[in-house]
Amino acid sequence: NADAIYGDLFALAAAVSYGIYTVQVRLFCPQNEDLYKMQLLMGYIGLVVMVPCLPFATYMIYNVRHDFTLAILGCIVLKGLLDFVLTDYFLFRSVVLTSATTATVGLGLTIPMAFVADLIFSPEYVISVYSVIGAVAVGFGFISVSLSGNDGGEVKQEEKEENTEPSVCSQDGALATNFVVLPGWAQT
Image 1: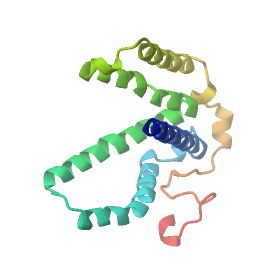
Image 2: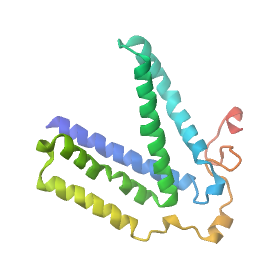
Image 3: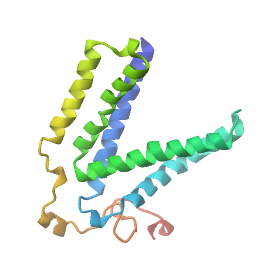
């Protein structure tokens, strides 16, 4: 089935994108949390995403026929807060506190959770030996990666003292420009 192949390719692209995303967070935000503000980083990411998407949203609002009400706006805002802000914040915190690998495998826990949701709402499509084995394997995989003793959660005192250079989000709230050139108004 061609649709299934396209769906698998999009899922693979999403997985690669999230992997790159978490590794970048791990590289740019040090474990010493005194050097950055997570909320500021999330704000910058939101700004970087909003600016290129704004023309598309404006086009959709004014040129596509729809019944846009305050209830729909409320649902969009609620979904944005719960689905993007909260989940990305938790993802970033888990990357900083553990490792990019543990956080990414933790995202894989959506597989057993989706299995349980499908089991509740449409059991006729879900129940098979392979789906049960897959959901259990992902759960055990997360547990084994979490207990593997990676060094992601511990920072040696010498590393804290050496790594005092600001990262993406520095202590004073200014964006570090050692990897990005920003206009003057954005550096305050």
